[in-house]
Image (cartoon, rainbow, N blue to C red; front, side):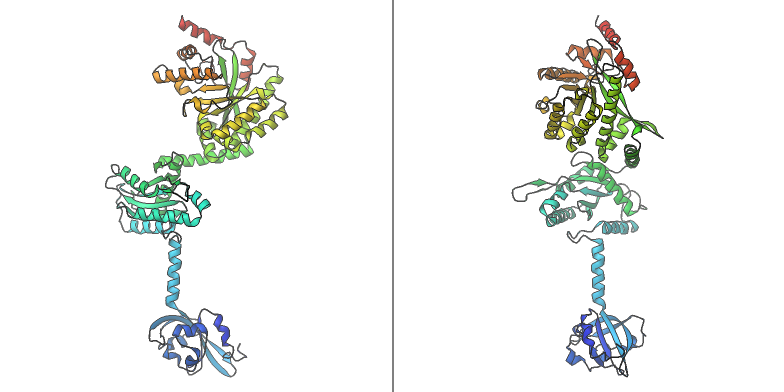
Length: 563
């Protein structure tokens, strides 16, 4: 470019968004690109040959700045209006002349662009609500300004908008944005709400205050619920948004805003594990439990994938209340942690269900169970059907049948050696899937049972259409018969209705002779519980199976009570 006539090739600068001016040694404009003429509001024919200082009176600052510094100068357009620009000067050779090349940019445009970028960083463009970063920034400013009371009356609340993801996936992003935007507008109209933001695609965050930390809290939640719990009807299909709420009280002026929001979202996650519309207030002990559950989940995953031998099965006998014979067993999973020792089932089964790995435990149970039964049979023992438990995840995923079929084939074990137990609540959660699973298992040759009956909807209506052979009466009713007339009535009714549908009832959790006496009076002929035995290890089961009527002594004591 230094060897050619730069003025003749200046039209190449028209591709630039920045303004380019070429000046001679007298400060006259030799060439200008399209952006330059648009900036000053003139055309090239009128601009070329005019003094640059006519448009930029303090241009000497730019010309004397050298070739590296960016300098800010004032300007004046052809119509007389002012402007503020920033630019840089460099010298170029054109033949035997030294010219000045000035590259300018409208500073106000850059500032406006920067403002737009800053706004986009702190706000959601689709809903025009502040985003997570903007919300935390605003809360932080108010914390630093001492605007919050620290008596628990002011709080950050994270609100999950239920099935909003469903709307976005089926009705489009515009529908999701509109629903959120309208919910935000309603929330802003509440007197108790001072900040509203969109924390993620389906979670709104608010800063709210009440006059009393306890008395008005319920009214506040109902007000928030009314703003977001709405029905939306696309054409003929109605859909309802039912929110969950996670609350983090602002009770320390030194708290970090990100920490306050994190606690609210943690409480929201806890609420979402409960019934629709639940409210959860952040508590340190809840957080500690969540951290503990994360550790348990990590160890569970490791044990499942790398060390399945940490798991083993115990077996609880099912006893004939007339003879004392063992008529069945129930396999119960146990976990022997290498550092913590025995982990109670109630400590790891809920974690497994929440983490979505309960089915993996089912497969471990089935594999250990099938080969254990085969081992007992090979030892010449007269085995009885052994029950295993499955959950709602197993029903939904429907992988049990194929896995079990292959396993039984490999072990050359008859399906009649097994009984499948499914809880009543898992059945009601998906009746169609439960029916399909039970029908496949029965077709294979397994016995099917309803476990913990009475704890769910307590109605045989839910299982009369299922191919069920056994109904297990939940231990909570069996163990309270002596003090609760209601429990007595439930046990008696379940026993009678089970018999009427051609199934067998088993009383769970029998621990006293009085309980045994009572269930026998109601016609329940089978029982399991600590009165007979605690869950047994495989060797102890082998000894019991080799005995003749191993629990006859417990029945004799029961008969003595009757006498």
